[in-house]
Image 1 (spheres, helix red, strand yellow):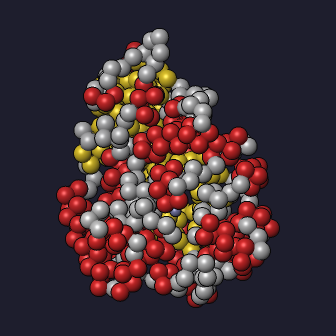
Image 2: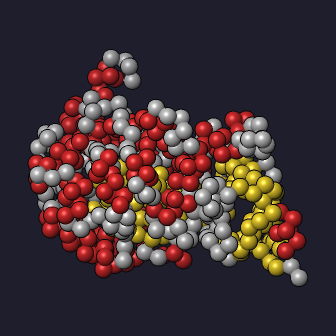
Image 3: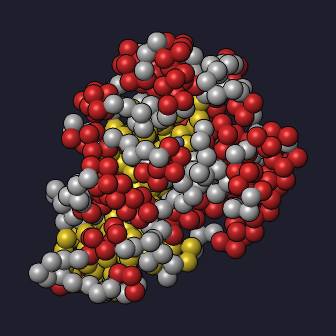
Length: 478
Ligand SMILES: [Zn+2]
């Protein structure tokens, strides 16, 4: 007797990401029913067992778990590319735009970024943003998996551009309290929504952006709600400078003191963490997000992910924001992560392709606390799957012996544009490279218009005269 399935993928180069490597199955098959993976194995065995509503011939394709982007700020896609190659990126590059990022512009950026990531095979998006009306709804409408974090800080909005670099930021308690209320409301409405596809974390933006009382309060609230904390940690010399001036301590020691270092912490960047601090954070059980492209462009630094992994910590990959990194594409992050770390350590054996592929899938899922549901292709897990076209010129030829070249090519040669099909929760969201759930043309038109509105407002604001890139423009270099 045959069993029924909604989908049966057959004849794939299957990477289950189970075990300690990539879990390769030649001529592999996956059966999906009611949003779940119900069987995985060789094609002949699954064909004999299942009758599917749709059989997808995955010949000449790699079948992988959907990729995981643990740290994004999707609204910033509306000002992609305006703040690169500058010192003091946040204050001198981004802040003039932050003053004029109105609601419709932020939403347009999120729509753009979500579609960009989805089409490049990202199925889980860890977005960190102010929870304006309509933001969470984007992830619900597109159909992707999302881990949403509402930004909590105490910084008077729109003022950062006018502060002198090195001065202590002013805190406004009313701002922090409003952010905390918004974060609680987001959790109440969206944690576990869409049949569990959308979950929520708490997001104190960074240790230097909130007063001590509020940081303690947020930790208590997160523990009471059973939510993880998603937080930038030691994200730049600017942060360390603020912490030393305010508390006489660097961020890791401060976080240890106030009880933040535990397995409920998703620590983003660790740009300025020393080897010892990195190990201390990893030993605590906290997880790390590595944003290679973003921190490379913003700071010219390779964060200490090798040290974090050596200390036994879990590392996920993140694309951060398009105003710094320019693209939100985990294929790009995998390649940059492998390259940057080889260069940093002057050792080509550091961060091999299979290792970064694990960080983009199963280890990323574990870092987000979702390893039991996603990140590998295993019976009982959610059907978040992607197909990558191995007939793309840059991925040919395909060899399986004596050396299998598929994983190195996926990491070092793929761009994300080879992703043909994306499935989340057993629903096909992208087919033949086209998004099925929303009107992509409308998203393009909206973001172009909103970006010009923001740009015009920045141009009218005298603060823009302080932007470092204006000089390069004047000299005809940009
Ligand atoms: Zn960030």
